[in-house]
Length: 308
Image (cartoon, rainbow, N blue to C red):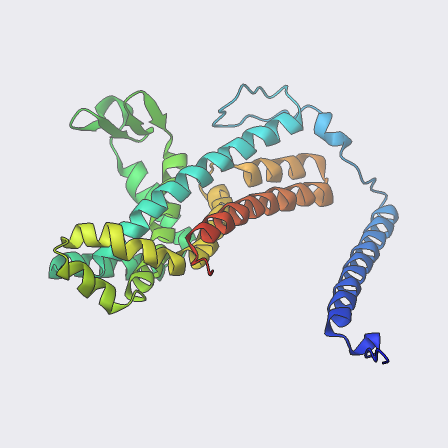
């Protein structure tokens, strides 16, 4: 009895592995070619590639410094300040926009006509106007329209508003930080609202009927039955919105908030190290995106139906 195995080139597993290997080789080759071209062009311009400039004195001030920083510190210290400022906006923005998006998405399906229409108007306005325009509106029309610090307005004695920003208890949020946070929150929240609405409507109608037949109130039915099932549909597109929020935070430069892009731009203007600075910015936002994607993929795996 002979064992007639087909030739290896007829095995689909062979072609899968071969295709992946060729893709990796091609990617490495492209990167190598681009690197050689970059090095040759820099040599022709008399520019030396390197990151030694990061240890030089920055010699510029930063408006918001969550860690100790002085203009006499190095560029790498200044970039750390910008990085932390970016993280503050990204983390708080993801939390706040999730709350706003889920609230607006559920309100879009409300039985109350007024609530449903208010949510619709919010979604259509914020989703269909440019984010940059919204940031400029929040900054110039809202925050610069507040009274001066000595005449600040107070809400129940808990929150104060002035041209210096928002003061909540002992925390003072600058107008630039508040503008960026609110702009990203309401802009991204409008997209998340539609994702939530679509996810809820994707749940079978029989689930609603079964919950109501058991005597569950609509709010309890939504919290315990409908929304957990809708998460299976909501989480994948939600990841894209979180990634967009992290990347859109780079628009902070338009209102003067010193995020990592703002600080990196100042560093480039002073040192002339365009390639190195751009690589650092790309690496920063790539890291942001990979971390968000990893966490959301783990969350998505948790809520997916597990087949036996």
